Amino acid sequence: MSQKKIVTIERHIIEEERSHPGASGDFSGLLRDLTLAFKVIWREVSKAGLVNILGFAGKENVHGEQVKKLDEFADETIYRAMDHGGHLCVMASEENENVLHIPEHYPTGRYVLLYDPLDGSSNIDANVTIGTIFSIFRRVTPSGKGSMEDCLQPGYKQVAAGYVIYGSSTMLVYTTGEGVHGFTLDPSIGEFLLSHENIRIPKRGKIYSVNEGNYRWWFDGMKKYVKYLQEEDKTTGRPYSGRYIGSLVGDIHRTMLYGGIFMYPGDTRNPEGKLRLMYEGNPMAFLVEQAGGRASNGHQRILDVQPKLLHQRTPLFIGSEEDVKIAEEFIQKKRELQQSAAS
View 1: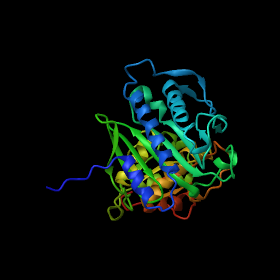
View 2: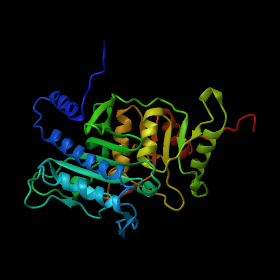
View 3: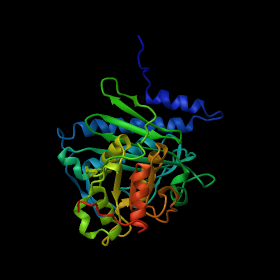
């Protein structure tokens, strides 16, 4: 009887390493340390309603947002899991204004880690999907302590990126530039097991995901694009269905599996958008492109943007290749809404 092979994420990492002659094992060790941090965060997330961990921590993060207790726990857990392994030279977190240095008494390594410890934290108390996002670069400084220069690299230089989604099941999705793979946590054995091998996004989907509560502040091209998606046209599969969770990890995870487009545009209040390039835009763009999709700020490929600030913001249009291309045409005003005959 043919059975599906059982592959843990550690085995998968080791097998990928074997395909790169001369690999030192540092990168594999880095990813193993990260998966441990994710398991610890999952343990707390899964029992958050049973312990005194929900609610606010009584302080604001660098963006002026109230820090949730679980945000703070996730942030500290990742840092403490990664600061002593000798794989990293520096880290940066969405929750901290400046770069996070490796303590003096620990060795430094060749890699840089940027992370959003708990995306979608506004949904925590409502028990809605939340997640963790990470991005890994090779350092550009020669040795010693890492610096801001190591962190401010364009997304195409990423060597790995991924997210963990804490939902009805906990799933880790990651890429090292050779496809996208998903691993579901089996709590009974404490292992992430390969469940979604070589994820591919359909060239075109039937779902759009955006916060339409911001409609009145959108620029004209964005308004026209959403109207285009809502207009009936059987030859292009329209109208699209609207689905919006309000958790980037949740919305993009659905888009990765089913296709379509997720959007968080700039608008008249925030022309640069709301999402952070380094912690959200770059890692998600790397994943989606590796799965055959497309990611843009409306005018430029996300992975080609040269960051200037650690907490730089960006508009984001991401998902199925054809859907994102059409969105870009509307945003760049190269395409006008064609009203259907029925209207």
